Image 1 (spheres, rainbow, N blue to C red):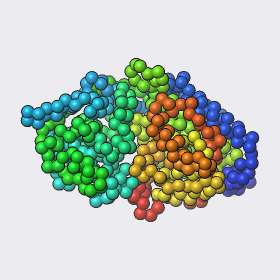
Image 2 (image 1 turned 120 degrees about the vertical axis):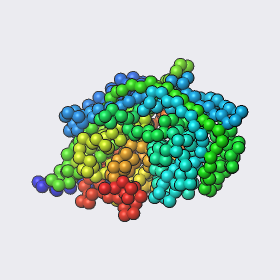
Image 3 (image 1 turned 180 degrees about the vertical axis):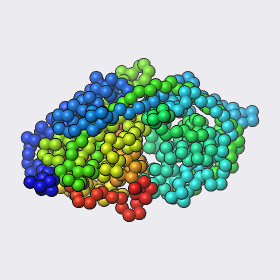
Image 4 (image 1 turned 180 degrees about the horizontal axis):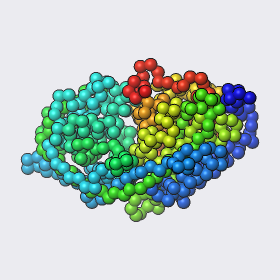
Amino acid sequence: MSNFSAGCLALLWLAAPALVHGQQNDDHLLEARLRAHIEFLASDKLAGREPGTAGYDIAADYVASQFRQVGLQAAGDNGSYFQQVPLRSAVLKNSSARLHYSSGRKSRDFRFVKDFFMGPDVAQSESKISGELVFAGYGIEAPELDYNDFASIDVTGKIIVVLAGQPLDFPSEEGAHFGSGREKRAAWARNGAIGAIVISTPRRQRRSAWERVQLRVGKPSMKWLQPDGRPFPDNGSVAASASLHHEPARVLFESAPFSLDELIELDESGQGLPVFELEGEISMAQQSVHRELTSPNVVGVLPGTDPTLSDEYVVYIGHLDHIGELAGEGHADKINNGALDNASGISVMIETARMFASNGAPRRSLMFLALTAEEKGLVGSEYFANYPTIPKQSMAAVINLDMPVLLYEFGDVIAFGAEHSTLKGAFEQAAGEFGVSLTPDPFPEQNIFVRSDHYRFVQQGIPSVFLVTGPSSLDNNIDTKPIYEGFLKEHYHRVSDDLNLPINYTAAARFTRINARAGALTANQAERPRWLEGDFFGDTFGR
């Protein structure tokens, strides 16, 4: 039998959904396995799977054992399933966080958490700066969008004050790229700012309530370490930054050409923001406790069957970590179990690997990658994208599985980013074969495409999608909106994302089959996935 014929036969096991649906016993077994994975990974014994803890290491061992059991080849360091990611962790000394404003006879000490929030600094164990102030709009430099907040003002050696987010008229995903904390901070450094105050506006707080900063108190920040021991990315000239609630921030604008209320109105209406100097000075300081550690990505490979295409990989990814335990005393339940975020995605990945290994590999090779430190800023994925255990150019496509909301019989799926590349066709076909539709991004204001691990691979030029369940239901009598939005509001990054949620394992099994079918179509097609002509991400990052 030729390799091509084997590849064709491998495709058949996913090519007939009617046959798959008829295998009710197999569906029950799949549901049972998915339940077993989620119940283990989201158990209290793993204490929220924070990188650098015993709970995360147990979870990594579990995933490696499952990869071995289904027959994946080890593709980590030194013939193991583990790629150890060198990390530096930083925890803020809360009593050390200081933010002080003075102007003439006026001065104000802002209150930590109540008024402002400052995270730990991974680069410096202690920082203390003061400087004159400049209002710099959103603090964005985006030549591709013909936008530059720094074009007419000098911020060298100064502390910039900016509004959170980006202009309303920015294209959703391009705007999310330039409006991300990473890109903004790089722009601040390029223009010589020494610090930044980011004002949390009403528009931002409708997306994420200010009160949620309390959940970050006492939690570590992490960055991966370069071979010379420096954390990546470098802070450049920006020695400190803080978020400031818009109410106390009004004092900064009392003698300014525009009041903060006027700027907020411009932000809400989508009109352009001015830039101007502000009176007074800001002083800010922090102290952080550093710890160096390693935490593993877990990597397994199923070799492809085609003598030529097997040198290319379709890479399934999902983050294994979650946010650990609540800091401090007085919590009846301290453990953020992360049942849906992301025990669900990892469980779907494991069972996708089992389907391929049991029923036949496709023409291209498949990699299955459970990532560390996503919750710390897509850290484990960025490390792998920079130091992959296979040749970087061999990664043909990435499929990300992160927090599918498996609480109802979904009637559609979303493949964030599919419209940017030729990957869309595979996901549209796979969804249709299982009786659901592929829905365009229904939450463009949430900037989801740049907020999960696949984006670190996009930044390496690799076409990628982020697959989740959609907001509609197969049962027209069920209103999914309060279920979907209720999870995001009440359970996302909270201790209640646990095994008490009414997880629908029938939906989980169907989502797994759609995911596997889309991967099979991608891995078996003759043409390598590519960015569409003129696409922003392809033009910006594509090779």
